[in-house]
Length: 184
Image 1 (cartoon, rainbow, N blue to C red):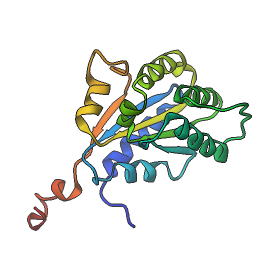
Image 2: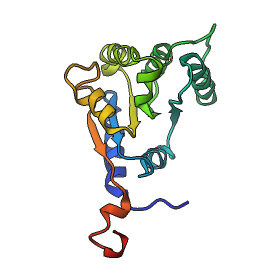
Image 3: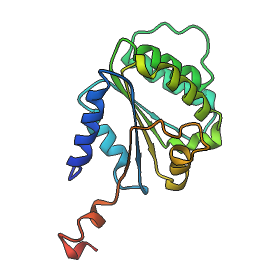
Image 4: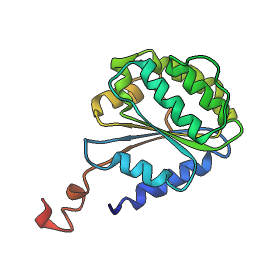
């Protein structure tokens, strides 16, 4: 499958990644389902070290087992015992990002609301404590705009004011309708 017409968004993601040589960066990609959020993030990350975590509707423990298996494919790390909470996964990744620059993609980020809403406060704490010493390029993807907006834009929420950029993707068909009227 070819990748079309997201050059501006790719450029933005590359700029933010370059900034992670200094400090961690958090970017949010949002938009309706099937507009290419995941494809954009994976296309961007394809040429450098990255982890892709899909937040499925399952227990936090099962998600952590899957995430840890993925981490072990990219990093050589000793993990002792079971990791049952996302905060432990995130802490581990922030520790790794102190010595290595990489991208972490969290797809369907809003699903933590149904799995464990405390994750947002835990991420906030870990991010605030570690951001300046790490080189993590964090990309959070969400398809439920109202929830993503609440998570990152509501001043009462833990992740308020933590993102560097929020990019709302539109369907390429709709965004190109002015060029090709027959698409609308």
